[in-house]
Image 1: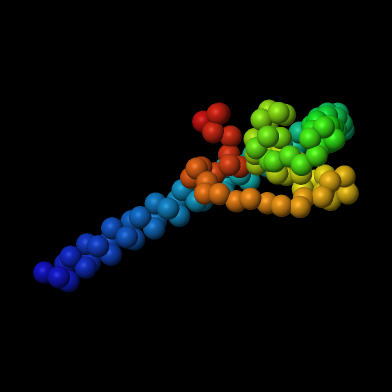
Image 2: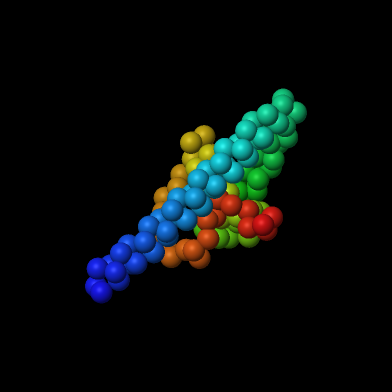
Length: 122
């Protein structure tokens, strides 16, 4: 009897593994497809628009720093109206450019959602 239970448990775990692999594969295919679509849309005009947007939001960050001195990721995100994930990428961009110095990072437990996905469109 215990061998039957063990086999049943093993089959359940194997089924979970297959389902998990299927979901991971589907996400990978979706990401590759989206990247291909975005890459094919990269025109000089699109790059210029992105550069203008980047300069605009970077300017907002720099203005906040000049006004307040030290600011936190959450405040920047709320003031500019972009996600914390996008804000973090922006701050890394500004640090690479030498415009800012990131001196401190505070980490807390997440919400359990992939922040790289736009949940508003799903």
